[in-house]
Picture 1 (cartoon, rainbow, N blue to C red):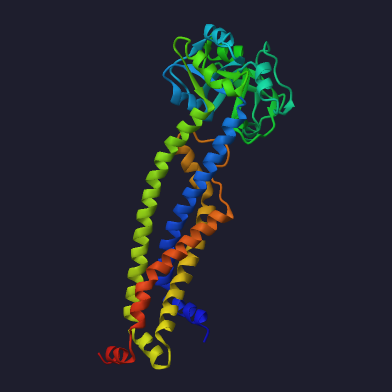
Picture 2: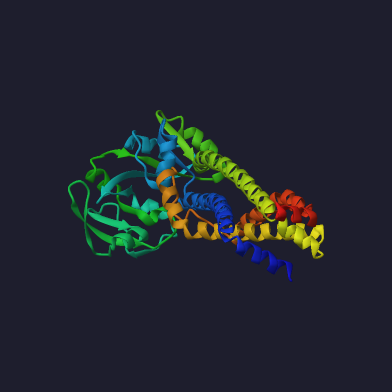
Length: 389
């Protein structure tokens, strides 16, 4: 009989034990695959979000670097503000090509957080010339008009020309444009003229941040140093923001990796223990196989093959489980991980899947060696004695 078919039949005879072993492996692989997919997806989307800003640095109130990172990722709220005089000082700084003010504000609509961007439209369009829009963009002097991101428009079923109650007083704002989907953070934002944002939320003269474009990206470091000479102002470059966020996430990733290592060790001990119990219970079977001509290496191959089948199927099941649960995992990450980018946080690829499945197979191979060698030492006489006793 073909050894592979024989191994499958043996596993089928011990169906419950096989399923439980596969389940343990699947859970460990699912956690590992999810973590690797999250790492790849998070860094990829983070870089995409930062690159989409089209600026070199942000000028923020001194003492708010982490809040600035929050602003970049999803429009957080900071405890301090800049003012119009700060804007003039930044604009007059040597090496600054463009300095555009922004007011970011978070507000609630039916229990859900929404992000407002108060901007100077003409300057923002020069920073992001790739923006395409259904309808039109607002002029800086317009009142009670709004442009929304594609994702927000689809979620809230908003249309061009629609009137939307906005702000604490529920003033009617006309939606005059919807940005095409970019996959970046702006897909979920409200955009209004800066003066209107300051008026509606009573932030007259206040700015959350000033986005700065240097004359030459190579001199951005010197420009940042000059801006930081302005009292009570701090500069955060895009590189610093990316590094800060990745360091925060990296700490959590290290903890998760440690947990996965512990899980894999426990799984390995579980596999080994299950195999040893199986070998003990199959003393008669192995002895009889030798009695009818099977050699020691045949028994070793049989045990290893059975283990590889279980670990391979467990690895495949784990990858599928992670893929099917990707939406749940992403929702959990967005609720618990700071500065989550707007795009997909789970980036799985075939190489990653094969890596996780291969690891489970290698784990099975290592764990099966001792039980396989022990099973090969069974003799027909031991089988007869165990049958008599």
